Image (cartoon, rainbow, N blue to C red):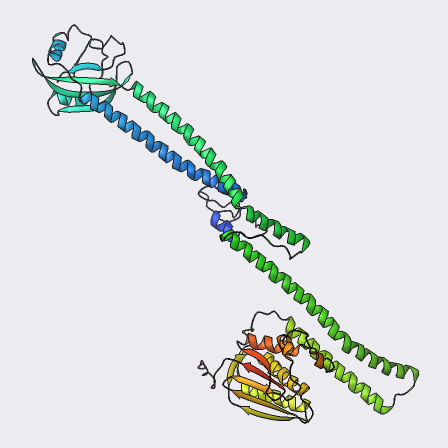
Length: 508
């Protein structure tokens, strides 16, 4: 194992740092390492997902089949050996046979020269470790356990052994009562056939396991290909959008699994992006349209002033003052429109937490009323304001309040009244103008929307949109409704309290 940490680079500084995934898998560079080896892991992760799934399925099946095959082979081997041991224990030896074998021991072969295959081999074991081999049997070396049986230390012994000519046998040694007394008989059975059967079983299990693993890999590849079809469709859709920027692409959704959820989320995302792009295009188009009117009027007035200077034909003082006042008003209208556009162009992600303050709503309303009185000096304003404290952005909330009151001033007849009340966090502004037609109510907060009766009045149609956005970002709501007896009632509700929150203790 190398001395470098996983993810470290050797031979100089790399142009980029190792990622978190590289650190976890040991891909940080030539100095990195992992338990499985970085080369093998890197090769595996480089494979397509369906190939990785197929390999994982094949590996899992291979492990399961191998475990089952080994267990089957061991169980069969144990069972066959148990049957062999049982047959050796139950082998019957006549009482006369050990005595006859012992009497002929000196004339019988001590090494088992008769090597013809036999069903079983028999020999007598003496306490001193010598043996008397039965005719037709092969000599089996006497082991310590066999001699212990002959000495009377133990009743029987069961073990594996090898004949003098190298043949594997299973040996059972026991003390047997014969006509000449108690003798020790060792009976052996060759293991050739059993070993051949077990070898054939091992080959069969290996073949079946191999076929199973190959079949499992093929099935895993087919299942992975079928299961990843929605992912392929999603990939194709993403690549299509990246090339064509076509956000109308939708993926068919079938089912309720994770892939279906991913497809639905993708469709929702593309729909939201398409809607956002459409709103952006509409905003640009509407802004261009709204900017064109004051710019055209401003250009006309400036052209008149420039032409007067170039030709030397003086404009009457009253007309000149009217032109300059018109230019000033148009510049103010342009500045207001540009400010509204900048406000609407801000990301719609809620309030800027670094700008949020605890504000006295009643004081902000009073300030906005002062500006409204300047814009509508012929109107009568009444105010009933109870203390209410809210958390909001000061500039944005003040702008929203000014827009609401400006809207009331704009539509109030000369000599009319505007009634303002603030109670329990609910601000109401009532004017006595023409009111709002029922069919116009759903559109009053749309950007650049203006009712047919208001298109002759100054304004861009952005004021109420800014009001709605600011109030919603502050956690409140705003509504407009026709007032009883004519006019309109604007209602703003903002969460807060009648008393300001306690100040945090000063440190130091």
